[in-house]
Image (cartoon, rainbow, N blue to C red; front, side):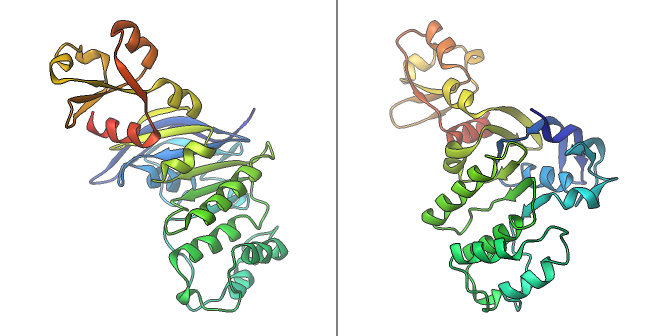
Length: 283
């Protein structure tokens, strides 16, 4: 399987923030979820891939092309949904079609208007009157209407109701049924990633903590529960972080089976992606 995006020690240094070198791949036919707190570096990583900000060092290859030198060619193959509304408020969706059709060589207005109908978006009303969720849906419609091979979405589920979120999850899964397509999805709604992502990348304070297969993550990580006295007996090298609760302590471990072999009889539960993100933040 080829890679849609390759980050090779991609690094960005700002005055007050440092995204440390990132090396990872987004495989064709897959969905990668980016997780981490606000300000961790997720959007910086996306902007670097889109050449919206310049690399401090390293390189990024997209569909085998240099993200900087071949930017114009690359962007014809990327559908991007940013975390904020990018449309002029006085435009209508119909006018957005007229403008966007001039930007993409393979723009398909039938697909675009079909998505508007699917999302129940009126074509002739000003964007200004729409909710955040409706604006997100228009951006998604645009991203899917010009034969993109890669979708990059930054918090696309914000402001969208559960039914619409399910529709979007279905659309993304259908998109990657074509083995040449892929999705990079940054979101705080980790429940969505548990349902559709193939890989998860966790970024914390500018550092890539891991880039792993989602099913392996959910299978291996766990949260063990201990009383105050039992917690004192746990070797600090055997867990990543812990938190205190009403009944004792919750201990976050990277490998449930290995932990249980040493602490036979411990009560241990599966860790969700949200749990993993929170516990790594406490580490």
